[in-house]
Image (cartoon, rainbow, N blue to C red; front, side):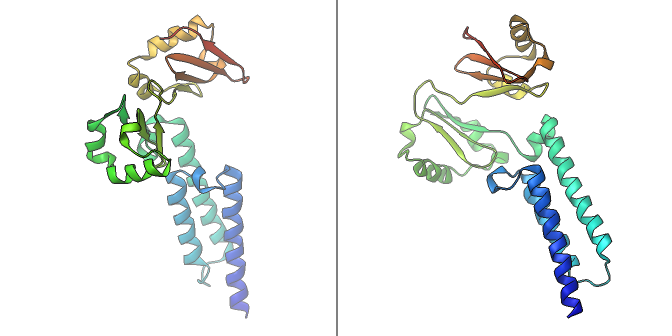
Amino acid sequence: MEYYLWVLAKFLVGFLIVILHLNFTGKTQLNQMTPVDFIGNFVLGGIIGGVIYNEDIPIYQYIIVLLIGVGLISLLNWICKHVSFFRMFAIGEPIPIMKDGRFLMDNILRKKNKIDILNVASLLHAQGVTSFQEVNYAQIEPSGSLTVLTDKGKYPSLILFKDGEVRTTELQRINKDEKWLEQKMQQQHLAKDDLFLIEFWEGRLNFILRSGEVKKDMLKN
């Protein structure tokens, strides 16, 4: 009986640490999790499963190992959030597959993207779009979901700037550079420290300040 109580105690401790970690990071839903979270949760599960039946490992060592795992997951997520290169490597970026009703074959056939066009068609049908002929723009999101726009001339917004960092990949998609973006900030009398986000949509910029205020560039770029 003592052995089973010991196993139960270890299980409850592991369960509590994982639940606290998920609540602390705000990752309580599957669609909020990044690939780092999924892999990290498998690792934590492996630690719990490998230790709870082993009487030779004291509970304090078990807790320390779990906390190290939780800390590593949090560190990797922080790096993903603040380092663009690592985010692209670990999480990925949206992949446009159609624009102006035309298939972007370079993106579709690129081996590293691993796009299954039959799966894309199924995702399309699940959104009530019956044919590729209806689609003006489509892109595969890092989560694997599909964004589809059927209205001509409508495209998803792009985040050009976030938390003090210019997103050069997104700038390249609209054939602009960092110097152009800095000029736009100067026209609005804004510095990087003032800004939380810069969003580009339908040829215009939205400047979201750290205060929550939104300034709009009314001229199309």
